[in-house]
Image 1: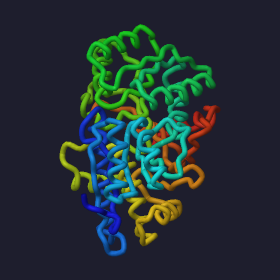
Image 2: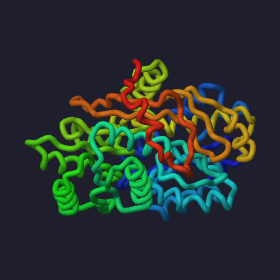
Image 3: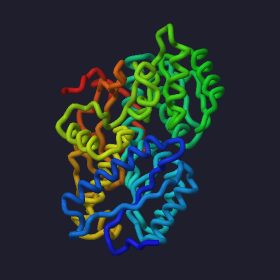
Image 4: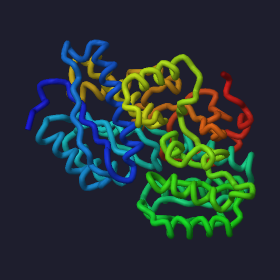
Amino acid sequence: MPHHRDRPTIGLLFSATGVTADIERSQRYGALLAIDQANREGGVNGYPIESVSHDPGGDPDRYRLCAEDFIRNQGVKLLVGCYMSHTRKAVMPVIERADALLCYPTPYEGFEYSPNIFYGGPAPNQNSAPLAAYLINHYGERVLFIGSDYIYPRESNHVMRHLYRQHGGSVVEEIYIPLYPSDDEVKHAVERIIKAQADVVFSTVVGTGTAELYRAFARHYSTSARPPIASLTTSEAEVMEMGNEVAEGHVVVAPYFSSIDTAASRAFIDACHAFFPEDVTITAWTEAAYCQTLMLARAMRAAGSWHVEDVRRHLYELELDAPQGPIRIERQNNHTHLTSRIAEIDARGVFQVKWQSPQPIRPDPYVVVHNLDDWSASMGREERR
């Protein structure tokens, strides 16, 4: 087994197979693009940054074993990866025991801190809080929850329930389906959704079940107006899987969409198209993995070192002009200042931004914003192009 302790190396923990493979492949290529860019900028101390990869197949135990292999056998202590929360939870004790560093480029349920994890996706105050205000203002107060049956959906629904109640809304039903749902399980869930007659459906279904749910939903509403499905995670990858006609009219909150028309976003899209295989879709979580890996690489170069304590210190001092806008890490909690954007999917499958935060939102993973009036004042604001 090669040993990487003597040169700058980043370990990539993204699944190429399993339930979330499409998204994790997009994240892996985002990370590889950042490494390529960092090497064109000079690498670290004249050395190119190398990468090592494993395919954990979406299985939490395999993520843990892969992380152990990187750290113990290959001497690699700087990692980027994980998507589903139970995979991050499986890796966390390994990372902490070894005093390694994990950059986690994915939205999650909040209420966590580790000195060894840098959280690059939105916490609930950066996505759930503005989304709740937007949905109540635009669609109504009756919401139905549907999620995949694991940590992230259950905790995200707990947060969203509080947000709706604070604003006088109500949760009419809460449904969970397996990570690998059968056709009958999806069909039964959609029948329950229709019967409940909610104003909006809040979905925390992830992976392959996402497109299956949206398709079954569209079939049932083929001749009548359907309530929107709103999501924290549905991306361009799932839209490509389900088809534009199925995706049209649904709502997503994320820091970044590939439709954003700014110079930084256009440069990122061009770089992705030149670097990625044709079947890899650019998503918000591609951008998060790219940004975190680029920040990690630049911290290594600034430190002139790939030792964890040196890199961690320099990460706090960086601000990146990211495709989504400026981002930086909050020293108090290791989460990232991120812009929040809410988009509706149009007939071409394009995410049309309807609202964005006036500036990046300071991450607060512990205390959810309960006063939705903080957000609703600017809910009608269109993105300036």
